[in-house]
Amino acid sequence: MIQLSDKHIEKIKENFLVTIGKRIRAVRKEKAITQVELGSASGKDRQYIYKIEKGIVTINVSTLKTLLLVFEISFEEFFEGIK
Image 1: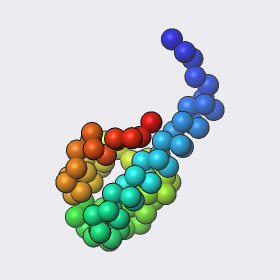
Image 2: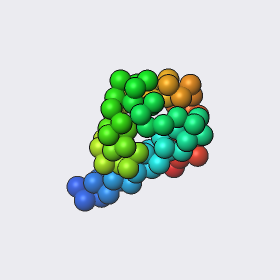
Image 3: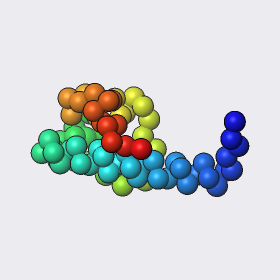
Image 4: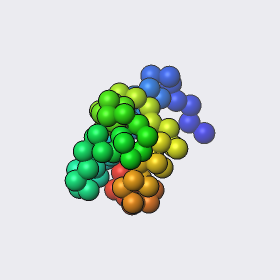
């Protein structure tokens, strides 16, 4: 088993949040949905959607699931190609 430093864990977290945010934005754009529309459909406000897309806030699994339901895509489709 590998032991990760706190600094390494924080770096992974930051990179992952940015990657997830970029993917959410890309899917939103593909579906021609605005941040306001996504927020309204998912019960979130536009500012929160913006912060998710920028990797500023940590998105929890239930919020991600809600967004994917709005997008009508699966976890598998969403994470396809993300390393």
